[in-house]
Length: 459
Image (tube, rainbow, N blue to C red; front, side, top):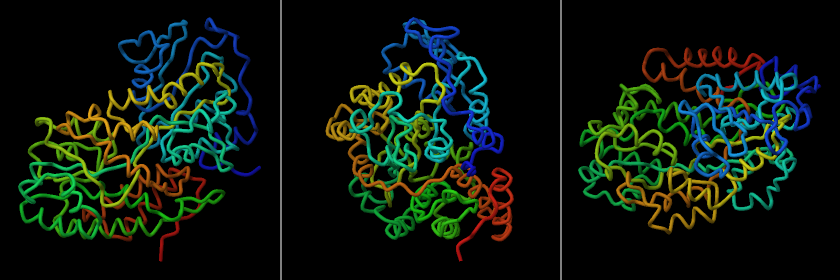
């Protein structure tokens, strides 16, 4: 049988034997709720973001335990939240182990819903894997029930035959988020339209970066800040369907070269090594000399805002130098769930109900997956952000979202994206030479994915 894409060797063997297909026991066996479904809904995720959205809009929620691990529903059903960190593939490993056990565990222990990210969503929507149910099997008609979603999110959540196997409340277009005080100091204005002209493309940004440097400011904190823009532009998937060769796209090599050029020119802070570390967080503080970050809505809400120690209104948004998408959490009904009605209701409540999506946007500043709703939000002053000084960021998010072309995806994207940056971080910091960085990437990626056989670099 054809090798399944990107699952661990153990999971590949299990799926090859066909044990994940149609393996659920009939609803109403051990421990059922009042409607005949299982009394426990197990949801796998990597943080509490989805839980908070469920709590905010799913009308059947009664209460959640103080530690956030159990949410009680009004009919007596309990949602059990199984959370593992996304970094270094830990979440996928734990989820894969649960999927392997799915046929053999009690209904109470079965995975009912799991989440995936854009970086590895098609690992789980693969039709042969058969771990994410087609939405139509739940009674959800994507053409009707999800008609208002952005097309690229529907495509991302579908298998190669176009069968949609997941849904998302998020759309993640990215913007440039900048400091108004630095803009005034350097350019004499903080107007988003005028600043937008100064960052409208990469060539223009070079000129702008020179102006910022003369005044003692960095354009971005780190070379990692620009990676997603280049990564969104690759022409070929890291690993093509059915292949075992990693193809490093020329756009990735362009990012390495341009990062080195920007470091040498002093446009980036050499002391900040990548992202998601203490130095990077501090670069978002009032004492930092960093002009801008490249973030989608979740980045502003989850990352920038918590790290900012000054008053509201210092940050603003404008167009990025190129359109990009960063992230997206996809919600899947797991094959074998004994709670199909609950699962359907949760997916529809959180990802398809326009009123709920608008509430999520209002309460959490999420750019949600409703094309008509986001257009309305962009024209409604009530969606202005206090953190952004009353600016309505949706005005800038909408045109980017409408223009996004998702780069070709593969099931190996998370590992490739993490490890190429890790390996060339050492090169950009001057710790290893270029060839050694390439060698380190090859070693690391084949250790993570032993089923892959070689790496091809652009000539």
